[in-house]
Amino acid sequence: MTVYLVGAGPGDPGLLTRRGEALLRRAEVVVYDRLVHPELLALAPPGALLVDAGKRPGEAHRQAWISEQLVAHGRRGALVVRLKGGDPYVLGRGGEEVEALQAAGVPVEVVPGVTSAVAGPELAGVPVTHRGLATSVTVVTGHVGEPSTPGGVDWSALAAAGGTLVVLMGVERRAEIAAALLAGGRDAQTPVAVVERAAGPRQRTQRTTLAGLGDLAVEAPAVIVVGPVAGLRLWSAEDRPLHGARVVLTRPEGRIGPLAEALAEYGAEVIGLPLQRIGPPADGGAALAARLGELPAFDWLAFTSVEAVEAVLSRVRDGRALAGPRLAVVGPASEAALARRFLVADLRPPAGAERASGLASAFPDPPGDRPGRVLFPRAAQARPELPDGLRAKGWEVVEVEAYRTEPVPLEDLPSKALEEARTADAVVLAAPSAVARYRELFGTEASPRVVCLGPTTAAAAADLGLAVQAVAARPEPAAVASALARALGRPLPAGPAPADPQ
Image 1: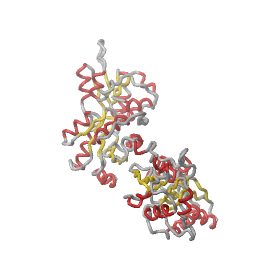
Image 2: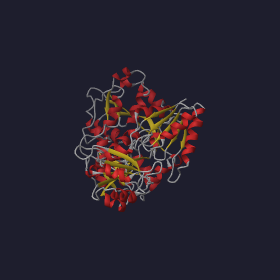
Image 3: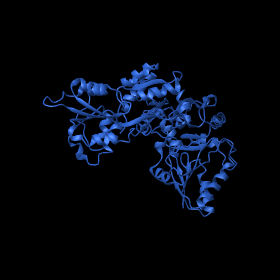
Image 4: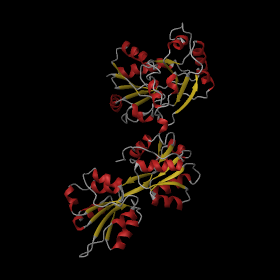
């Protein structure tokens, strides 16, 4: 079997190539670098062996051990992915690993990746070449050595060459690098941009000059850009409205991903904390199955959650069984859940009223010639707004338990997410049950600003003593991002929004 050297990209998991993703999904062994994003490791199959090959500062000797690991796993016939930050060959010592595999007779293939030498500056608003400013770019290691030694850097020659200079792994020696370039003739006022944690949600760019580089407070890892282009400030990932904000998202297990991905598009660092899980009804679904057998006797089938839609439609074997009742939904998420099954909602509350009471108000009056009947598949702990509102209008409402929302036991919650939830910038509470569980776990001592999805959730939070900074009227990314921006005191998002979660 082949060993694949895959470039993991500069940090953002979205910058992994499609070829790299396909190989990770088939991998039996993944040997990964220190700065590889955890989401990339999650692409590997559940039974894959994950080998941490991250080299900390001063561990150059570890390279021989890495090559030995690759040869050993390759020889036993496993599909091995060597996941390297950036591109395998751009100052990544990938060539040495390929040489070791070839010498051992192990088949090897290289999958290029996006290098931070280009992506880091670009995501900071700095093009490495630009008409009229730079027509060449040089990428160099920041490990300062004598020019005459193997692998040494001739800084004087680089200073004289002009163009853009991109320095990787140069944070510790930045003062020496600046001095060497100045001694080689570079102007002291040459613009410099330093991009810390490039391509990540906490990316930060500092701007200075070559004369000031040595005194700049910088945290590794960072990309240093020297040259006229470093004075440009084009679009930057740091311009996104939620850039760097650490947001706790408390949706149920299996429901965090789509909204988390959308908020990440706005620049947020999302911490998934699934406080609830969705389980079957107490009777295993017997009552729901019986009611679904009576569907022709109902005028309406009313849904107030995606979970209810999925619980019902997973039990409907023939779509023609839904030909009798009309379909009502509380909002866009449940409407989209119907649409995925090629069903169109007949009724939805107007914008701004997408909640159970709004759905009850939007319902027509029952037919005058006979009793009107509504089937309401609900959670075991559902609030009474919809059935009470419909009964007040004269409808006969038949409620049936379709699913249960249960708290995730403390021991099953990710410990890192629990720790980060105390100090995050904001927490998004998606339902009254999430409010109760959050209050149970953290009391009122946690520091995040509280954002609630919908007024019902906000009222539950206020009842339990949580200060609510903002309310998102709908669970759509644009509405949640705007609420988070208000809570954090940031400018509201503008322009096209990411796709709504489906």
